[in-house]
Image (cartoon, rainbow, N blue to C red; front, side, top):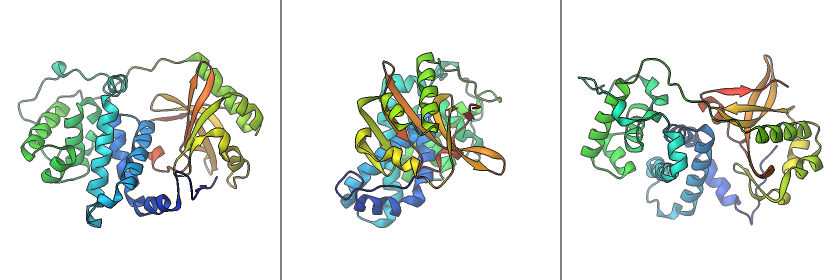
Length: 302
């Protein structure tokens, strides 16, 4: 499938040029958003919204050299907005109870193991951001203060608290409770995969609502009925097949490509349904940085 950019639509040629300009930053931006939100998939959605916001405000950027911190600031603010949603915040910070963490006598220093990148989900948002930006992305204290809307002193305090809490965590891997499975959604996804692999596009459309929304990164955002989505898969030069699976515990569809070692997950497709009818499809085929960022990818056997 190849990107389709409409000169009069959301993804116009100027936006395509902007995305090309920031292409070298997208992997790092996604990595940051993934650790802030606790979700590889949510991180991509947050990052895409941040990039479009940046595109609309690009004239406010004074110096090209300031592009990276400016984009990180927008992405950070989008992450905080995302976490303020109570249900999402509770899921993203599951297992974090401040009173249960006993601080060590000596707090962890600047040389904290880079493995903390996947443990910062145990911290509240400000400490999480400061530890990520300092110990993973190597920003200065002044830069971090500007990005998170704080002072250098505030950043130092957040770093001290965050590093101390991380040092007090158990040495074993973080264990998260398994999400509840929705049997109805599982059946719907299995039926979708069956029809999709048969290229029965009329059958797939019958599973969707009349106003079902489609989002394909960098390519399309709007009604499924107004997109060339199925045509693009039909004429794709790369051999593919679709299976049900999981990314970091969330049920998704995975598009597999053949390799020397068998079929490998290439990208994910996220399905949202209401009352057994698909209302939204998000296809991440143009986001190659997502799979490496995921903690666990499971492709169910066909």
